[in-house]
Amino acid sequence: MDIIEKLKKIGQKVFDIYFGIGVAAMALLAVLVIFTVIARYFFSLSWKALAEFNVTLFAFTTFWGMGVNIIKNEHVMIDILYDKVKPPVKRWLSVLNYVIVLIVDLVFVVQGFNYIEVAGKQISQGMEIPMVYMYGIMPVSGIVCAVCVVIKIIEFITADISYFAPKNVVLTEQEKGKEGA
Image (tube, rainbow, N blue to C red):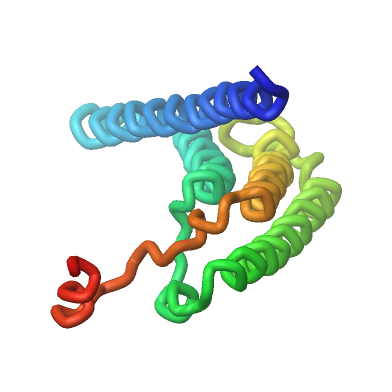
């Protein structure tokens, strides 16, 4: 097995752990939200710490999902013009697009650290922990997302040209006839 295959296997295992953390967080969030709704509406019980934890967990799942969306190509993309471009040009448009995404993500990371520096020492009202743990979600998830973006850029540069073939093309009846001949 060559080094590239080993790296791909390691990368897949790391991604599976990364994805698993997100799935576990979403599952926990779903259970806790259901629990808090039932406790509040049927038993008139609420806990300020649990409500704050749910909000924090929601923020975590949102920011944690950024990298998953990059790796899985699940982000929003308007590709009507992109699909009309020839595959060799698509490769470099994709790289340029993700370089821009990386720049925006790195600005997000820097601003996240700046915000932690300003507000991270405060104590949360619900869980009574330093806000650095809650606000730290932003830059940490941004760094993970940046790694995912770099992985995608490398994938674009090294991918076979067929990777960039049109994926969402709608053929007219006339084009379908030509393709079947």
